[in-house]
Amino acid sequence: MRLAAVAGAAPRLISERWFEMNASIITTAQARLLVEFSQFLLFDHFSDARVTNLEAPRQADWVGYSGHGGAVFHTSGRSIRAHVELELWSAQPAEAALGLPQFEGSFVSDSGRVMLASVTGAPSDVTVALPHPGSYVVRAVRLGESLDEDDTQTEAWRLQVWPESS
Image (cartoon, rainbow, N blue to C red; front, side, top):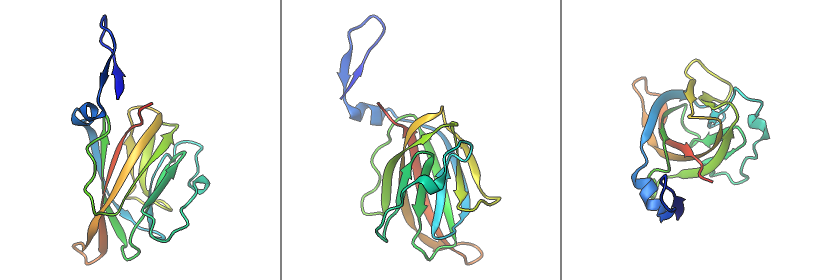
């Protein structure tokens, strides 16, 4: 439950479900990223944060991990490209579909900008402006694999990002 206040009125409790139902997409971005080392990034390359400072999971079947600066996502290992759709939300959206590989974690962006990017950088990398510097949550869902128009193994991903509530 959250406490909500209207000017001149006493604060009242509002359920988390109300916030989910009233969350809206602020912006979207799409990228077709080169997958390197079975990974791609959502990271604040405009700050002093470094991907190498994030601690990777030890298990082989990880989907993602996050921390100061952003997040790293792990493809199936067969894919050469990732087609990523990022949705920036005003608040937490409804839960993701069950049964698909997914990850949810927090990250901090010091600059208020992140890049959907290949590990070593590529022309296909996309910069996304966040509403402000600060703490965010990312939910990543690996949607599936297919061959694209030039017969390249590609994975589809949806990333949902929203400000972390305090």
